[in-house]
Amino acid sequence: MSTNKFLKFSLALVLVIFLMAGSFGGGFLAGHYTSLGGLRLPGDFLSPTATVDTASGGTPQDLQILFKPFWEAWNILHVQYVDQPLDDTALMRGAITGMMGALGDEHSGYMDPQEYTDANISLSGEYEGIGAWVDTTGDFLTIVSPMKGSPAEKAGLLSGDEIRAIDGADMTGVNPEIARLKVVGPAGTNVHLSIGRTGNDELIEFDIIREKIIVPSVTGEITKDNIAYITLVTFGDSTTADLRNTLKDLMAQNPVGLILDLRNNGGGYLQTAVEVASEFIGDGVILYEQYGDGTKDSFNAEGGGLATEIPMVVLVNEGSASASEIVAGAIQDHSRGKLVGVTTYGKGSVQNWVPLSDDQGAIRVTIAKWLTPNGQTIHKLGLTPDVIVERTESDYNNGIDPQFDAAVDLLLHP
Image 1 (cartoon, one colour):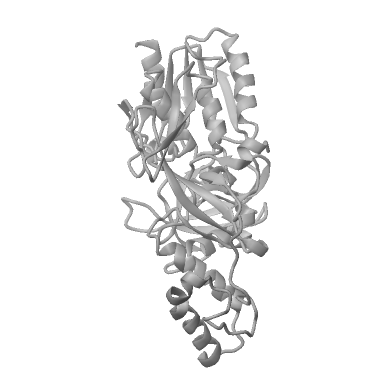
Image 2 (cartoon, helix red, strand yellow):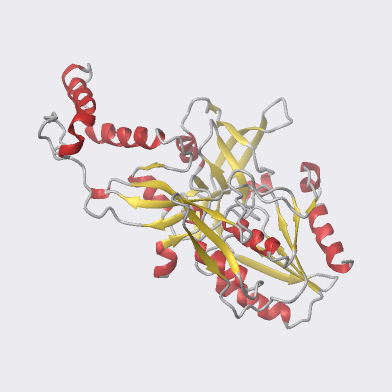
């Protein structure tokens, strides 16, 4: 992974992760990766038996009055709670979780050491599981998008599906992260999912065999109508190089137009999003990052793109998120091409991922919002396509793709 991409992740779904063994979250990070500087926890905080003197136990002088009730509660638990000894590490992590939750921001939060390790697995490689991106911020583990060609897609899971039960165990009231861990597993094993789906009164039952999944970041072909059709699965380490190689091959065949398919692409690295957009946009702003004080940084097209003039259409849907929305929003705002499909996911905030001392995980802190070149925010709104075309469950099941057909028609009959 390059230093630039490691330090600056894309604005993807913060709590969205692959349903794969060694769960994958690297493609859904948001913002910047930083260190703690001089901050550390108060002394003796992790001691298994110690209580803390609120006057001199390591709490900074100017915070001693504020934190007095916290340390009083800590002491009371260690003296009065019925089941001793207490797990001080669990209490510490719970305190951080509660603090982050008090922000009221669904994208800020605490990752324990295992979650943090999982989330930093590279965007490229082989994985074992059902192959879907999921959201863990709601009441149930929810499918954001199945990966193309994955067991999840083959079984018929759709964006918005809620996993209500796993192998017969009801997930009501169960932390969605715990539910995720129950879904992942080694290739060749079966997982039974009971799915709640909008419009269905009864749960839908699925048996899915987990597989080893190799994630292709880019695929491309020339269609029978002489249109270059490129699909981006993610925005990872190799995506820019893969895209350029694909474009060189396809553009040499003199296609009459180009379709960029970003449907069910949950995101990836910010720098990769800028590089991808630069293949289609010759110059100008790709996106802005706007901070709490009103200041903002701009990210511009890098130049040298291989497909900056060819007529193009971008396919998007409710599973297109973050880095996908950056690229699609830039193409739309620059009038470089039309968007076809349905409204995108709507993830437009930027998070710092800050590792904590002593390998105790990390916190995610929202520090900015990103805006399209025209200054529009898509956070919780998404991008509205120029041409809205639905693709129903029946269409999926029967291999019918009216969104793709509409894109072809736009290119052939502008």
